[in-house]
Length: 182
Image (tube, rainbow, N blue to C red; front, top):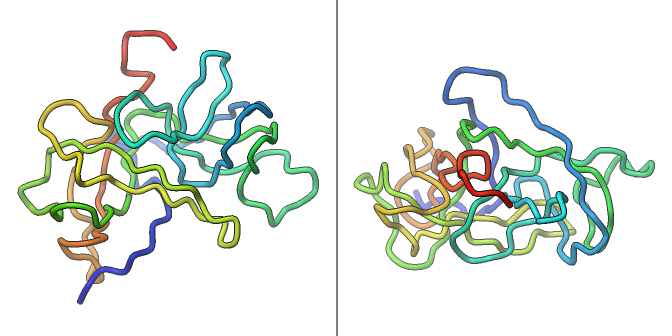
């Protein structure tokens, strides 16, 4: 059976050390021109605010957006619209293991890909479904440095190697692991 194409960003699965998974608060300023969705990979800006990762490869990340805080009475809103200031919750611990979908560009990842590194593909989220569309960019697979490490194929009966396979990954190029400042 073929894997379904349902990108929805990154979602925490467990902590590498067995610790609880916690999300911390970060500010987003109104100069941010891109909406942020739960599951989006985020970066720290030089002014201390965060923004969604919008590149197609490389660079340190802060973590993954978990949700919104203080959403002006609209409890159904799951994402922070572009050019809107707000507070978001971020899974920022560099030892959280996430589940993410690979894209379908290039050669599919295989069992021999375990332990290799890949970057993220930052596609804009959907304001209709309120889902992130960030994926693993399998065309960036390397044994050198990249944003995340492939740990294993998610062990489920509806998941197999090939287009849109779901993987467990850990953030490799993380702002809390790098010795350089923002």
